[in-house]
Image (cartoon, rainbow, N blue to C red; front, side, top):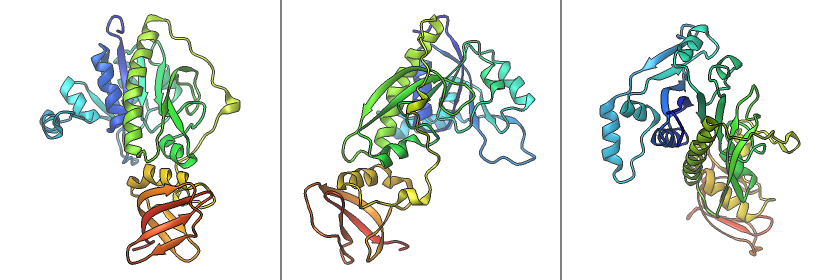
Length: 312
């Protein structure tokens, strides 16, 4: 366990990829001085930061409603443990920097924070800043690695804890762990695996950093890949790829709310539900409007899904 109750500033957001590592750090004995979250509605009149006051009653309701396996959001965890929450609009502003310096942390820990930390923030902790990223860096850098894991048709991904520098996911690697993917895996399932695996890896790495035994290694820039946020065209199926790819891509990202579409040549369709695939089938593409059943000829195989005319 981390020695002398190491003090941490935690940068994250509401969901599991932040809240699960945060809970793991607290269980390990780390003292989380404050939680920093991004402000999403920033205007010229916005304060550089503001202190949030999450409701303890809301946290208790979430525990009750979720039953045997409770999942609290990051603000609810803050409420439960009486940790201050700072919603930050301007990270470089002197008022924000002064507020963060007051906590005098040993470390900054980051998991799913949507903004790049400037050097003025990275210089605050005496031992540096560790970021948990849901890919095997230097591969798949960027803000939405889970999407690109499915888009590329990867058989595996993983989590990386690395020291932060001025770049985007570019600092020296402290530790990594591989996560295999299976056919039909959803993004929610992969996110949960990344959160749980990453929580364990992050707490172990923080322990190593506090004890002075962490051994960072430079990232191999020759092997680096970087992706931005996906655009509309990235949600289109490519029939020149395999049926297995089509099934796994749709299974992975169908729950995002962004339509997954395909042009069959005769109709422009959106996928409603991926059903199965046959890697050996050579049948031609067919779509039955009455049932919505699509058989999409791929290369190789046939992908089967329920579909509808795009725009309906």
